Amino acid sequence: MAQRSIVDIEAAADALPPDARARFDRIYRAAVYETELRAPAEMVPWIERTFGSLAAVRRQRIVRVDNLVTGEGALFNSLRALRPVQAAPDGAGADDVARALEDDPWADPYTATPEDAFGRLQSAHGVTAANVARYDGAHSLVIFNEADPLAFDDAALAAHLELAQRWFERVWQEDPSACYPFLMWNCLWRAGGSIVHGHMQAAVARGGHYAKIERLRADAERYRAAHGASYFDDLFDVHRALGLRFAGADGLEGAAHLTPLKEKELIFRLPVPFAAAAAPLSRALRRYVDALGARSFNLALLLPPLAPAPEAWDGFPPLARLVDRGPLGSRTSDIGGMELYAQSVAASDPFAVAAEMARAFA
Image (cartoon, rainbow, N blue to C red; front, side, top):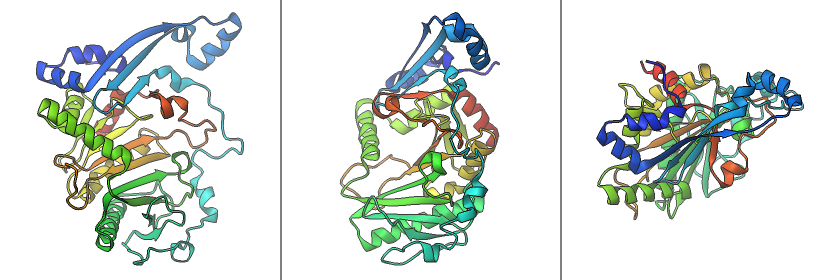
């Protein structure tokens, strides 16, 4: 069977069994349409060199998918992946991480970073440090012993996640009102990492979870009230029915997101405790880097509270989202006004991404 494409989304939805189609319609609205343009004769040679043919540009197919529950949405056009992108003026190497690490400010994190008031936590693969310019009252780093952020393996990732979990629990012990944890890995400069040396950032909110996570919780609760079903169960079931889900026997369930924030976004449902997902998550990350070509990425763990909270968190699983931030040597930002204020725009096809990720779990 030929592999599906995102342009087949309407036909794919129509082919779903009735129960799966009902879940799809509760969550998504999808549309495919064509748009035409006329190019001056002077542009034709450049169009053919850049996009392969004049016909591919003259008539284009656009796919729009909206999540009716969360308000997320994406516009797809694979032609956008072929747009010319200007390189950084200093020739910043697409893979020149080693050169950037020649002057590593965190070569010795014990003397180059501050520590939390309760001190540092350590593992065999890293150490915590207080963020010198915090964006919340509890905001620290998990600094990797291995400076190259792309040189991770299962053992290292497991140690980083377990160290983050210990840090969350220590913060909560110090201040029981700080019980809403968030963990992120901004890998390299395209993803917002201001320092190349590998590190994650951990934060704990007080008085309620961070706004977008709280919005997701509230949306899921409204969905449960309206349909008597778990939003997260239905979300992953829809992705499975469409062929966008992948999973292993070790507790990790993932999918190529149907409404990606940006390129090649994956969503994961993690086991409890979330650190137990380290081995399969590491396998997914390695495939993401080695096969899908991601070099700079954002990995975020959306976690329920550490203790009972006033809001309803029953059925909210530990989640992870992973998104590619584009070539390291690109001068052009991958996110503009559309993503900030309107709707995400993606060139990568979720069906192709899912097929590649499934090979890591075969």
